[in-house]
Image (cartoon, one colour):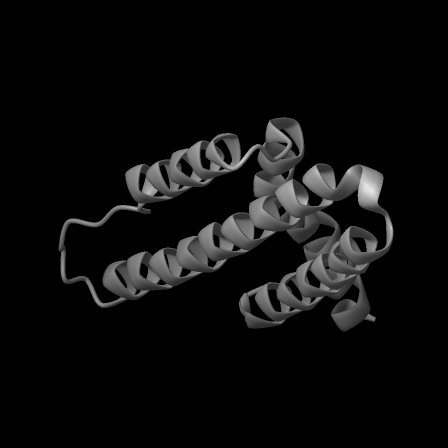
Length: 124
């Protein structure tokens, strides 16, 4: 699979659909408001990290393909700092820390089955 754009767009759509469901759950089920809002916050941050990583991978690929020899990174420190900032915010406003941390990983985990599905579908 040479093009990452369909995977990125599909993961974004799936994550946004999951966030909509969580926000509806937040509005309708008052007992789990801290969990649903914490998961939504984690999903927002996880999606931002996922898309930022995609931009960095594109830049690294272009740098290698053009033989510029520039130093490059995948922005690991930036993504970790953003995740720490979101978890600190969740703790500060008393959201579910476990749900927030889980939400940080869901977009990255969604990329695996999405990539497999799109790879099989495009191969047929």
